[in-house]
Length: 238
Image (cartoon, rainbow, N blue to C red):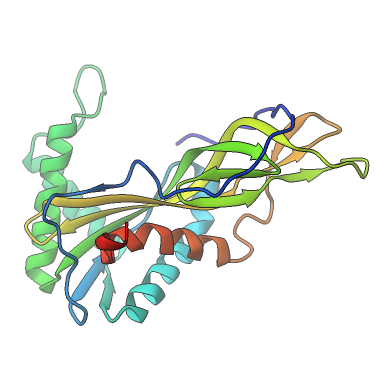
């Protein structure tokens, strides 16, 4: 699994404006959220970089709390059980990676995931299965802030010599990604919610530094969860 890269930012002046919900959100035509009181099952979170592992329990906790607050019953599939079922479904479709190139076979992956969801839904009577993800997304600098996936955060800087800095260009930021599946195994929604800036810009060293306090609190992850959940639970609000 890859590690987070530290990239240099170019600091210029610009004006900030309010962000909009992610344009990458996908909702299946005719999708209706499950009724409150029904069960939603959470699969183990995936992360896009090793550095994000510490965020997994915070992500699950926020999802459970917010789904329960919305009136749903929530259960989680433990990692060991998930790995066992997933291995069986991958074998059933003949593997999800090309034997020669190692490339992911998207159609086989989707079929295996759909079959896993069907099994989980049948066993638990779940109305929906959610795959939570911590993903790296491109954020757009605009003045003193960065915008992405419905979120806006102030750019974090250090060693500024007491001067104000504004930014232009792009950087990587952290988002919560949710893939929502119906009991049939169909992917009915794929959404994103911006959570955290990954880097502090060290002005003196002219480089980005990965934040040491990224998961010191679950507040920002909670905001990302709320942004990602809204299109799933209230699609009419989008």
